[in-house]
Amino acid sequence: MIWNCEKDELSYNISPETDERKEYTKREVLSITSKIYDPFGYLTPFIIRAKILIQELWQRGLHWEDPLPGDLQTNWMKWMTEWKEIRDVRIPRCLITVPMMNIVQLELHGFSDASEKAYGGAVYMTMIDAEGKGTIKLIVAKSKVAPLKSVTLPRLELVAALTTAKLTSYVKRVIDLEINKIYCWSDSQIILCWIRNAARKWKPFVNNRVESIHELVKSEDWKYCPTKNNPADIISRGTALKKLKGNRLWWNGPKWLLDENRWPKERLQQKMTKEIQNVIEEERRTTSLTLSVNVRTLPIFEFEKFGNFENMLRVTAYCKRFASNCRTSPERRKLNTLTGEEMITAEKYWLKTVQRDAFHDELKTLENGKPLPKENRLKTLDPFLDEDDLCRVGGRLRLSDLDYDMKYPIILPKAHHIVNLIIERAHNNTLHAGNSQTLATLRQNYWILNGRSAVKRVLKNCTVRTKNGHLPKMRTSETFPFEHTGLDFLGPLRIIRTDVYTKVYICLFTCMVTRAIRLELLSDLSAERFIQALNRFCARRGYPKIIQSDNFSTFKMADRQLKNLFSKTSLDKVQRTMTKHRIEWKFITQDCFCWNQCGSKYSVMDSVHWGGSVMNTDRNTS
Image (cartoon, rainbow, N blue to C red):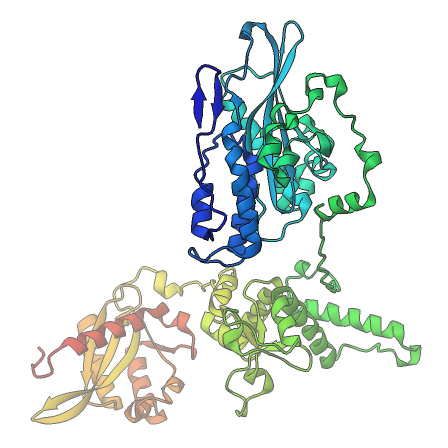
């Protein structure tokens, strides 16, 4: 492109060499087309024909050095012949020919159009001076070939509109003039309908491009113009260079742009055919509402109000009996006390309610006969549905002789009010036992997920098992040491005496107040040896008022010699010695830990055992 300073005109300084006998290749076609330098797009309607031809070369899969097929060779030579006239194109360089101070109105008008092969846009500037004279000049134009992927014509028109909006906005941004107004024009009623509505109404393709257009040009500034008055129509169809040189519509735009009163009247709603309306509706976004209805049977009553599982089962059983009696004749109605079968039915009802609340998706999968996903929390339990539709643990005890409920416990969730009531019932039935025993009792019928933590959570609120009895009076009254004495035996212990292992026993005396201890060594557990140990103890510590020991019946699993000590004959000897020294001998109740010095004797025994374990058996003790 060169500039003629004398005439202030732009022209193209290129002289193509054509040879009609030559077979052109794809490489040469691209090389020759790229030589045209047209930054403002003045020759766009002519160049677009070469772009369309190049696209067709790619569609046919020609290699770089392959000659053009006959039909494409003909079209190419025709285009090359027209190219010779490119030197005759003269374009005035100056856009504004009057002083800026005399201009009263400057407007930009963008035109867009598309066809099945190409689309593009052109931007014009209208200038009106103080005397009312106006001029229209082409500023810039741009074109693109239609994509190879099949796209509907209305969508191509929308893409052309977006290209025009970007081009117009770019001109306004880079030109150093104060633009009064921007308008964009299209001959497509469909895209005007899309642009003049909210973008969210349309499907993604239209929605995204309409949003971009709204950011660049206001929707009310989009106007309709007939196809015959649309300069961009020349771009989408392409034209010969000879026709383009003298095309006033291309270089100066429609005349009516200068007078707003002469602008085309819009009657879009009246002129829209059913076909156009159908195309518009095809791109309208449809709201799809998918309803997933889960039919859930409401419980008979609000189980959260109950604090005892057995009471809840009884109320449930009576409710079910009432419903059954309402459906039966008077002579067949049940009026007596509840039966065990009715209580079992009530319990199964609430267990199924718990499982429906906690394992809804898992139950649905099992009902359809499908396996649970690997990451499911019940997968490792090998669950299955029994004949009552209760979900049970599969496990590996199928061949065992255990009861059905123990082989296949019912699966329950960790956190549920009814599960808490079941745990409390098991805890009460085990006489407020600890966590492990309560959990073991539960697992005879149920498998609670994270059962140990669930049991701990419930049992920590139990106030009964935390209660302790009062300490005996003899433990809390101020007395002399060993006035109240506890008695027990340790052994047998093995010692070496003259290179022979022999058994010995330890008689343990402990003060029930001060917890002082005295140990007496016994060679056996005869009454004589015990009386000797008692005499040694009394000689050293004085005679106690009360001696307390385990009941002789507690020694049924003890050593044979210990049984002999508490035989009737030996017991009489010991009792006579106690009576002689006015000592009262009390036997505590079996398994009554609170009377056994509240654990003081056992803690002392543990200390003695530990001390014996660290002693060197080869050394003599003093």
